[in-house]
Image 1: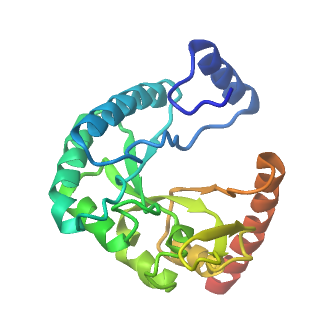
Image 2: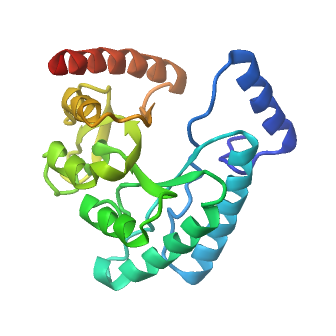
Length: 238
């Protein structure tokens, strides 16, 4: 049965713990899919309760970051209509989580109010908390008609990027969707993205997120390609 964090039992948590010790690895983040929902009072309440459970799990597993989302876009409204409500939600949660040492990182995900880096920046700056930062996923811009100057979008939010998702893709045949592909074979100039991160002395995590193929083999191939692209980026700044 497929499950998503935090809906796992004690036995599964203990298995994760023993695996981390056995393999001598750490978990850099968890992504429970929180706030990938409508911006309604009932959804905010249920998603917040899920976040509370995720915080408890993150503390138990010594995970420093939780990836969250920016609520589903309602086409009957504008960002200006909902901005203050979103800021209020994340403001309260940032205050709640501040004593734990865990950071929330909002992703610029497709179909969310935060898909546009400019909107995301407004929220982060308004909340103004060290507990709230950004998960940067440049491939999420593919098919959004925001333009493919990934460097420009990066610079809009670079100060607050504490986590990065690595994937790639091309525009779907409908002109507004993404077809995922091997990192380096799509639209995102990952060599330049890595170069920008290196120049900014980025010290956060970078997580591959293939979204296609066999989860294990695709992930392994993405790791190898990512290493090659990263090495190219290093040569450009030496």
